[in-house]
Length: 96
Image (cartoon, rainbow, N blue to C red; front, side):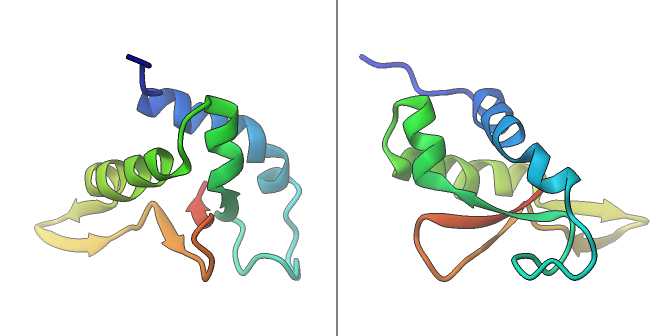
């Protein structure tokens, strides 16, 4: 049975693939509304890790978002989302 990529491998892949785009952001970029949100191509991440794109999406959406998306501050809950779904099923807008 083939081993699934770990959370760290997935996040490392996203970091290595998209860090330059994150660092190169300037106000007025037409492709992004904010520096911290980067469009991430799930199919490309899946190809790099040699798994089905649904595995990557599921790990981000159902696992990592649940574990990292909600924070607590002074007894009040506020939502800090890991990513935003884009209009296509292969791109997530990832919070870098």
